[in-house]
Image (cartoon, rainbow, N blue to C red; front, side):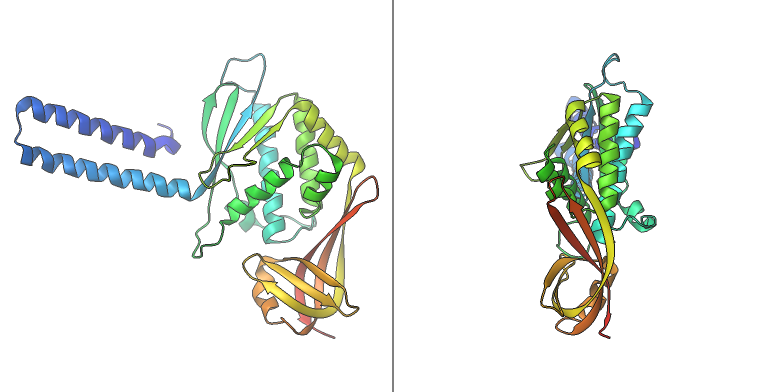
Length: 314
């Protein structure tokens, strides 16, 4: 039995047991009150299993990754192709999660905590080309804020839906850091080289009605790779600025800083520095920032800022 389908199978088995019991009770003429006693117990078990299934569905995000292979029967795929496509998607997920909840820098490894919390699980496979169903569980939350995993997938789809034009790609990739640019470049190159169309469908019940499906044929993937590899450049700098923190949003982990020379800077805050930063609101401080500059072939620049730390002003 597939462990991931165990709950569905238990629900189906309980429904079948209820039907068999009802038929047997009717055949032997069992008094109604005795029959109802046994059936009600089974029906309560069924309700509990169905509620458990609903709760589990609400606590995860699910993608269907369809890879259209040729020369193989339906439902079969080369292992090399499967690991390349899914492995690249996992690397992209790790990088986006690191940008959102740590920092956009490509220096050093991604923290193990982020990797463990955002690991895709192969839940099932389906025939019809080859379809891999992968699942990303939500971490436990005490607030009503959007689940971090849903934020990550939303950012991924913003990138996927940027198509294969330079300007939209510049807008989408600029805030995701140089590591994400590299991983997206490597992944699209792999799809081009493997010559396999890939379709990714976000089937979570919480996903929005628009933009839940992304498709990459080899030509489109090749165009994206060329833009990322030859026409967009991204670099990062560590910057120290004196100024005043004029705003902190603890829900979105964002900040606003007014520098000593009157410029206003907005961006994200490294997650474990949010509480510390709140204590500097409306105070002069020394901000340690990561500045990521992404530039198009036409010279257009997009700059994103991440507040890495904050200290007393010098």
